[in-house]
Picture 1 (cartoon, one colour):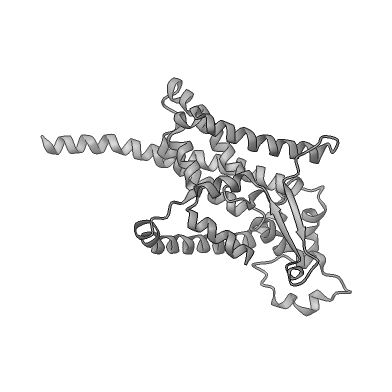
Picture 2 (cartoon, rainbow, N blue to C red):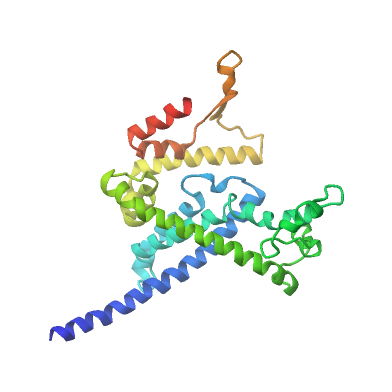
Length: 298
């Protein structure tokens, strides 16, 4: 009897586990494609440092919308509504992919593969000086292959282009995967010390955890909406001022300059008011926040 009960439990658990893996991978992959396209398009045209923030705004906005519609999905479409566990895993997947698609990775890595070959001229003699040191499986030096990439009016989906880019992309992707695995190993090593002994609070995870796990209470919190409204209003006003200078904006960024010695050795002291930084400072331990200020001024 007990053996039959255990087998029945395993039969029920298998579809649930299968749904978690397949559903999360499929849903996360779709969101990764959309989010990375959004980031690359925005950072190439509008905002240079969109992925420079502690919590990526694109990821947070995406999951803010998901958290808002999830209760409706669970009420009317229970079979396809994501669970909190699935949303949390998808959030991690999209966050890691966003970090890789940001301007400090893809924006520098892809041009690094091609810049030397395209900008080499007879005058700078790059081809004679260091081309022999560039591995052909990591870089592209054929200007005919690079012309469409730098000048446009062409498509990547041509066999000659895909064949030329395939090996460098695979090689650099392998390096990035190894680096990610090393970071994961480091996290596993230091996890016990940080979490069990030092009891770190991880303020960066506070908002995602509340957003994905306690959505209804979070949306009913008036202080949350007040803070969101103030921050959103400031950013919206700054964006409109950037697009239409006739619209005034609040000045929340200052540059302090010192002319007298010894303070002039600092050059300048930027004082910026970022709503997200104020929120993170509120969530951080007091001694850590004080250390940031003291060492920054020092």
